[in-house]
Length: 487
Image (cartoon, rainbow, N blue to C red; front, side, top):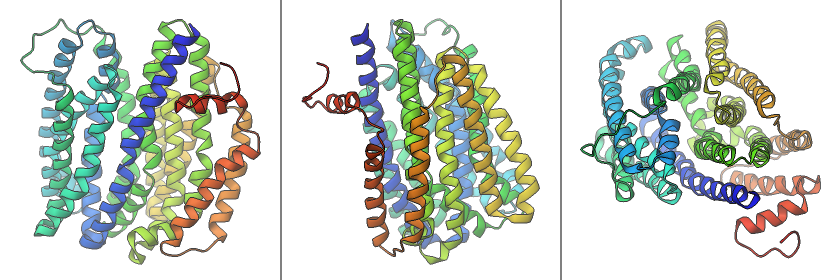
C-alpha cells in the first residue's frame, strides 16, 4: 500500500512540475507581451484591452470550470474513456457556443457600464475566443484524466509561444487593439491543434448514457468557481465602473499581470492534487492522503518570502518591464502579489474539501469573499481609488484563505506546519526589507531578484526546514541515487 501511495504521489508531483513549467512560460510570454503592448498601445488603449481581456477571461474560465474537475474525474474512472470524452466534448461545445452568444449580446451593455463605447467592438471580437477556449479545456481535462501530463504540458506551451508572436505580428500590421485580440484567439487555436495531435474525441462518436453524477458534482463546483472568478476580476471591474479612467485601468491591469505566478501554480497544482487525493482515498491510504495535503500547504507557505521579495522591489520591477509611465502600478503590485498567494492557498484547501466529497463547502468560502469585496470596493474605491481596490482584494483573500484552511483542518486535520509558517514569516520580512533598501535599476533588478531568491531556500535550510528524508526524496524525485537514507 505504501509503495502504491508513494507512486501515485510521485507521479502527480512530476506531472504537476511538468504542467507548471509549461504554464510558467506564460510569465515570460506575458511579460514580453505586456511590455510590448504597454509601449505600443499606450495606457489608454492598453486599458481598453485589459478590460476586454479580463471580461472575456472571466467568462471563459468560469464557463469552462463548470465541468473542469468533473471531466478529470469521470474520464479517469471510465471503462471507455474515449466514449466518455466524446460525450464531455459535446457538452463543452454546447457550453462554449452559449457563452459566445451571451457575451456577444452583452458587449454593448458592458461597454456602456464602463463608459467606453468602442469597448463593445473589442468585447464582441473576444467573444469568438470563448468557444475555442472552452473546447480546449475539454481536451485538457481528457489528457489529465487519462494520465497524459506531458501532452497536457506541451499544449499549454504551444499557447504561451504562439500568443506573443501572433500579437506582435498583428499589431505591427496596424491592427492595434484588435490585433492583440486576434493574436489571443490564434493562441487558443494553436493550443487546440496541439491537443488534437494526442487526443481526438469525436462529436460523432457513439453516445453513452448520461454520466452519473455529472451535474450533481459539477453544479456546486461551478458556483464556487463562479465566485472565485468574479472575485479575481471584481477589483478591476469595480475600479472602472466606479469612475476610474482607462488609464487607471491600464495601470491596474499591468499590476495584475505581474502577480500571475501564484495563479499559474494553482492552475497546475490543484487538479492534480485533487486527482491524487481521490486516488489515495480510494486506495485506502488515508495517511498518505493527509500527508500529501499537509505538504502541499507547506509548499504554499514556503512561497511567502518570494512574494515578499516581489513586493519589496515592486517599483523597480514595474519600471524595468513597463517603463516610467507605468509607475502608478507599483504600489498596486505589492498587495496584489500577496492576494494571489492567498488565492493559491484557497485553491489547495478547497481541493481537500472536494476530495473529501464536500464540493458544496467551497461555496462557504467563495460566496462571502465576493460579497465582502464588492462592499469594500463600493465603499472605498470612490474615495481612495486603485490602491483601495488592491487592498480590499488582499484583505478579503487573506480572510478567505484563513477560512478555507480552517475548514480543511476540520475535515482532514491537516494544516500547514507551524514551523514552516514561522520560518516563512521570518524570511518574508527579511526578503522584503533587503529588497526595499537595496537599490537597483534596469537589468540590475534581475540580478537582485536572482540573488535574494537563491538566498531564500538557503535560509530555509539554515533554519532547519528540510530533513534527511526530504533530501533523499528530492534525489529520488529527480531520479538520482541517494547516498543515505532508507532504501
